[in-house]
Image 1 (cartoon, each protein chain N blue to C red):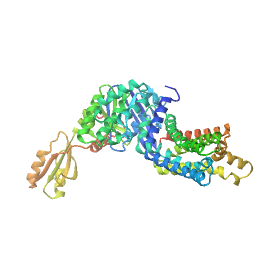
Image 2 (image 1 turned 90 degrees about the horizontal axis):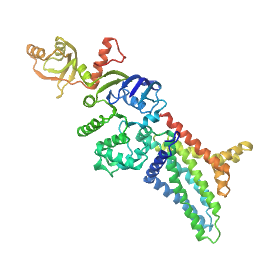
Image 3 (image 1 turned 180 degrees about the horizontal axis):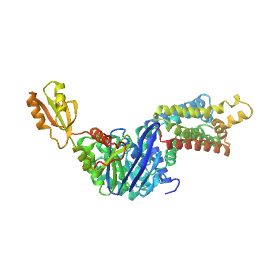
Image 4 (image 1 turned 90 degrees about the vertical axis):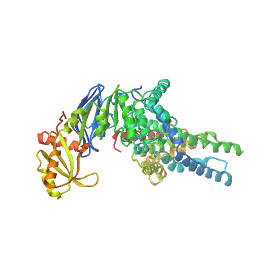
Length: 324
Length: 243
């Protein structure tokens, strides 16, 4: 369905996408995960034909992106980052306009499709309103509606839940769940939970390269190989740090402030090594009251850090390495 | 779908551009300025100087259009670039040529109303003046002004593709228009071949010929060449995808 080989895009001296290769079979939902500036949006812009690649090639639906971009675009739906929409046009007029540009020239066919996507995206309550009057959640739904108005085979969504409140995020995720049944779907995000909820597979992009490729479970498994505790003990800071670093199985100790601004440390150890008992014994032995002891969740950036550090240790840095 | 150009797509874009323009306050402010200025000069000529002619319109309108047309075109593409809707537009199955032609056609529809409105003054003269109105000359002025406006519009459209800021696009558009306006005005500075080249490159000499009721195919070719050249530049600009 989608085959990408050594795709490269440069902006001056900056290499935004650096020899990216991957295959996506029909019907798979793939999440592009990465921090801002990682190359997610540029990769998507390359796949949609918006930007020309400097090197490499991509085939979508068996068509060559370099020479058959227009044919690909007829069967592809795209929701750009930040979902830019014109302000001065009504919801249905906009969908009709996009439908005409998407090749739905027959009015009755177009009417039927507009009706379908209005229902699918729950836009009935905003029919007749101008796009500029809509809330961010409804605007996002309109963005999705325009992307699927022509019933595309491939759907590319660039940060579809960015800037939405939790309720709106749930609504959009529900909509994506509906769409995934019939389409190959690529979505980008920098929210880890998003891909865990939505995707069959995750591609982690960093500095224009794919640094990990696997299912969300594989990714979660790799994260679970590391145990992280936030510990705050009432004692001399340097002594506490040294004592924590000396506990068996501890990999790293990082100074950090807790939820109540108390001084403490994030202590990383192997997942199999439960430090809580050792910490309790240490605190009792040194007479340092425990102010905080809590499991730390890894942010995406920290997952990145862990993955790239692991690869450095293995001596395979800058290579495509599956997470599993 | 046509292999090279889909007229239905161009027409959809033209309708959208036209509708966007007529719903924008800029079009009304600019229209008011245009008719106010041209109408004022016409009234001065008609009522004060007792000259029952619309020739003053043919003389003053190009000067007003020098500002009016870039003001109407400044947002055609830059607005899409600034708001990010161009990215969405160019990932639809639409060629850059179709985008440019659609935008230009939408502008041409608006300009047809703007220039067509000047016919009011001709009709007024024909009612108020005992002299017989030269309808051929009047039509020549209107057609000439329309082609003149379309040429400026193509320059303005290209200017609009060069920056995201509309004011910058306005200034760039006026610079392009100025170049073609004044090169013809100053042909007398040159001599021999240089003077002939300057005169034929300048836009006003072609407008003057049509204003005299003389229909010369060379003027038509000139205006169409100018329009095609700047539309081509606009497409090439969009193809760079560097905004």
